Structure formats: C-alpha cells, structure tokens
Length: 162
Image (cartoon, rainbow, N blue to C red):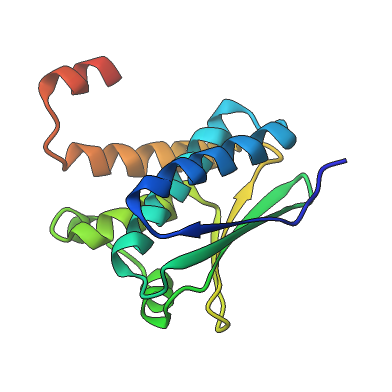
C-alpha cells in the first residue's frame, strides 16, 4: 500500500531542483503513473519550483502529495498571497510571450487539470491520472503548440519535434 500523504521539505535554492525531480520520480513509481502523466507532473512541478524560486519570500517549501488513484493532488506550502492571486487569474496566450512570469504560469495551467488556491498559503495542483482523455490531450497539445510557435526556437529543434 502506498503512503498517500508524503511530504518533502525543500529549501528554495536552484540546486534543489533535483529534489523536486526525485520527489516526482518516487511518487510516479509508487502510483505506477505512465510516462504521459509523469511528463506533465514533472514539467509542472519544475516550472512551479522555478517560479517560486524567484517570487516566494519564504525560503523553505513543503510539498505534499495525496492520491485516491484517480487523481493526484500536489500541494505547496507556504506560498505568498501575491502568488496565490496570480494563479487565480486567467492568462491570455498573447500576453505570455511578453512577460516571463506568465510563461511559467501558462505552462503550469496547461499541464494540470485543476489549480486550487487556498487562503491558508496553500497552492495545489491536481492531475487526473485515471485516464488521459483525448479531449484533454488535444486541448493541451494545441495550447502548447501555440505557446511554442510564439517562442524563438531554433529550426533544428522545431524539425526534431515535428
């Protein structure tokens, strides 16, 4: 049986991105999460870590996961109120390219199923791990394609990803 309330405490320093990656590996291995979900979870958590690294005033972060085997919720605590507010706002893809901060937020919103903002300094990302519905997949694919089409990416990278 999997321990469903695992928590890791991480100092917000760039070197600790490895702890985030190890946390995602451990959670996905324990829950037998496939590569598609693993990629979404890993990318959204690393984007979240990078965003908090530059914006959160607290320098230690608790990351907790809980799963009912249909959904997985990964929570971050404590998160500054200003950051919580920014996650509550809708981000327009046309503004993403102009503002670096919005890139992280847009990618996170594109990769998760639900973002929960709590008044208790908790920000939670929820993933539906029961089945990746084709509609969700197509929507995410379209959003990410739009995002990357507006980025300056070398032709070689574009060709390899097509």
